[in-house]
Image (cartoon, rainbow, N blue to C red):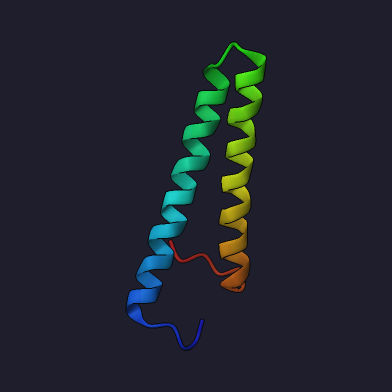
Length: 66
C-alpha cells in the first residue's frame, strides 16, 4: 500500500464499504425473493459485488482497511 495518498486510502475504504453493503443487500433481497428468475439475477449481482470486493482486497495485498 506504499505510495497511496490519504485521499486514495479514504476512497478505497469507501469503495470496500460500498461493496460490502451491496453484497449484504442483494443477498437479503435474493433471500426474500420467491421468483426463481429474479432470485438468480439478484444472486448474480451479489456475486459480482463479491468479486469487486475480492479484487480490491487482492490489489491491496490482502490487507483489510476497515
